[in-house]
Image (cartoon, rainbow, N blue to C red; front, side, top):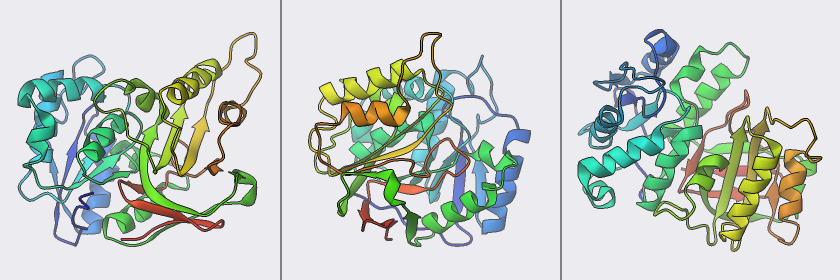
Length: 305
């Protein structure tokens, strides 16, 4: 796995919007934060375009993504927000460069930061041996909850090559056992959407992260079981379940919580499962490196530079 260079003051970073549209006001707090880190922020040429719910049409978003991935000096690529659109952007990138995997092999790896819909792009990059960072998107700096500052500081620490530590309580763990392995994954809906595509992740011997937001419980069950049937859980070292929040139900209740759905579907597996890890759509969105090793000692999850 290619680990991009860590950041120093004075480095150039860029911001793109591969999915939903943003306004200048949406990213103001993020711009202030990058300035405070001592980095030089460049906005992608078409960042503030709008077409329906998207940040410009598919071709424009792909053009900005290609601009960022091939940027000659940038050390990190931040993403403006999730929503929906990265899959369409990736399709347009394929049309633009014909063979994206081959094109990426000629680019210098740089940190790609984001989560939620950005999982589609994490899967592409990790498949091509680029490590990336599952972490906040730019619009989150404009939120007002108490974790905003700490989320930003922890992301900055990760980008600058400091160790990452996440405490885990015993009641969060099923099949407790220490482990160490390469972390991959992200949003469950996007992993589910990648099944049967060239970007379906190879999970053999790895630690898989899943998280999600605003899904019907029956559909969560469908996604977990589809991933199971596709072999996603066959040879895992461990499973990290990040935030599963704002789940919805029907008039006739499904009858199980998100944790119960996952536990039931994987009851025949003996790998460690860590629930309620503070990664994803909840207020606490801890940054972790995908494509890099993560270690669990029964008390703490950790990643080293």
